[in-house]
Length: 110
Length: 116
Image (tube, rainbow over all chains, first blue to last red; front, side):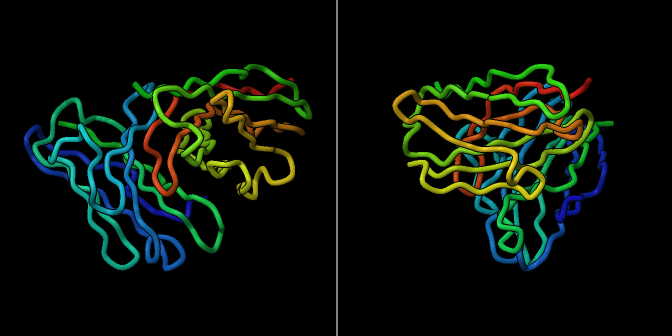
């Protein structure tokens, strides 16, 4: 149903780095800012990245964002057990005239 | 401290109505666009609706257009979602995040169950 595609899951050992891709189109990622959200089990989502690559106050620089064309990427360096969560990309879709979220990616720390 | 507290959820029969509220504090509510986002059990996030800071502009997802109405009372620092003609597929936890093109703050969410 979502117009933004993410891998269902990624995993890595503690201390390693993972990247999560978010693929869209010109009506969404291609022409709008991308945000990333972290949802820990049983909690509300939390903003991690906004305007493609900016971190809100309090978000460690282990989290990074980038965008190229119609795709965006979230990077998590120095993976910690506390990073185990679901991650969603999101952006405005000009064609749908609505905000769209990605399909979500579950991060597992091995 | 920013707080967004949703209320008004619960169990409702198909075809019924419900009004959700979101009480805001710790920031200048009247300066922020507000949204409703929902999450069905075990599923991903889905945007539902948004309203401008002054309440003059609203937008809805196709799935709720004509059935849901978003509104706000800036004097009471409260956001609302009036939901009519509820369907089983509206069952979800509903969140009220703030922001324009990114959602800075989120409430804890309120569950809505549509079932007979």
